[in-house]
Amino acid sequence: AAGVIQSPRHLIKEKRETATLKCYPIPRHDTVYWYQQGPGQDPQFLISFYEKMQSDKGSIPDRFSAQQFSDYHSELNMSSLELGDSALYFCASSLDRGELFFGEGSRLTVL
Amino acid sequence: QQQVKQSPQSLIVQKGGISIINCAYENTAFDYFPWYQQFPGKGPALLIAIRPDVSEKKEGRFTISFNKSAKQFSLHIMDSQPGDSATYFCAANALSSGGGADGLTFGKGTHLIIQP
Image (cartoon, rainbow over all chains, first blue to last red; front, side):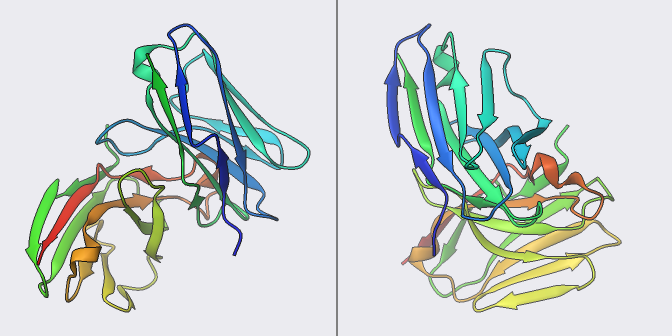
């Protein structure tokens, strides 16, 4: 069965640089979520989209933005990167805001 | 404020034993309680989930027990195996009240080690 696809899997950036993460949800899923997970931490909700419209925002810094495109894939844009942004970033998708299925994550390292 | 409190933080169980992880929640609007299993460097994988209209759900070696009045739920892993060694997260969501937009509220996680 198709799963949530995230790219890139690993990303290394310098401080103050910009990074873009991509997420391709499970086909026909209408909701996409972004989570940030620091080392040894639980996933923290950043933002979600339902039918290509921003649905809710969590603890997402102002330096971050996201959008969902017409093909339902989503991108998380992170600017002015800080050391503390180093984390695993997970995308999840669901149908009718039901069960969430997570991707494998994108590991961002900020040097 | 942690809306879903999970314990213990870490747990060591002998192979063949029963692993028990507990969670408690505050928000009475929560009506969906999944458990996720996460291996290092991997995404959380849905293990089993329960709705508050039942008190127990079993899938293979994994059982969720749910106590609505106490606002508590727990995961039991029977005949624990070394391959079960992972981090387990309980979570909660308020699906029926349209709260699914912000996804899940996670517990802090339990690092489970099954010793051979």
